[in-house]
Amino acid sequence: MRRHPVFARVYGRLAPGSDASGTAAHRDELLAGLEGQVIEVGAGSGLSFSHYPASVEGVLAVEPEPYLRRLARDAATTAPVPVRVVEGTAEDLPAVDGSFDAAVVSLVLCSVPDQRTALRELHRVLREGGWLHFYEHVRSGQPGSARLQDRVDRVWPLFAGGCHSGRDTAGSIEEAGFRLERCRRFEYRKGSCFGIVSPHVIGRAVRV
View 1 (cartoon, rainbow, N blue to C red):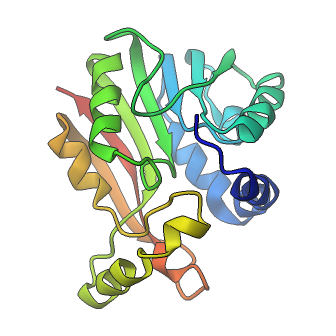
View 2 (view 1 turned 45 degrees about the vertical axis):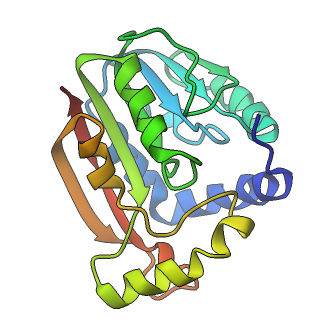
């Protein structure tokens, strides 16, 4: 079980404000087109739940952090689709092989200790042809900014719940056996104090 009690409480307080300033629109883009049975990995406090389209039959929301999991269970009671919140980690998902039509990760693959194993697990629980919808901050395409991310990353995870500022997540998704179908790259909040995590990607990939 992963516990980040201080970070979890800070995140729980700040995340709704981030949604109000633009992240909510990204959640709409992230979840558009989903249908069938979905697994959301690293559900946090459940801020994505209200954005699921009616075409989704059910969501299994996996969250390892106890405080955030309690918030997610509260959020699930008002979600427009059935959501079941369970304890689990991205590297050991509580699901059988090929049991989901789609998977969702939102600002999660930056912080999992073993990204390769997490993506292998996502590949395992998706049926062939299933979709991985992703929204993540990633490594900058600018060499100078990428070097800064590398330097900051020596201490950043200690204060940000294990978050790494500059992972090449889109590349890792492809290496894990997915084919990128859409990947929009953009800068979010460029120039703010969180500039090292401003490069983002949002899109979807198919399990092959």
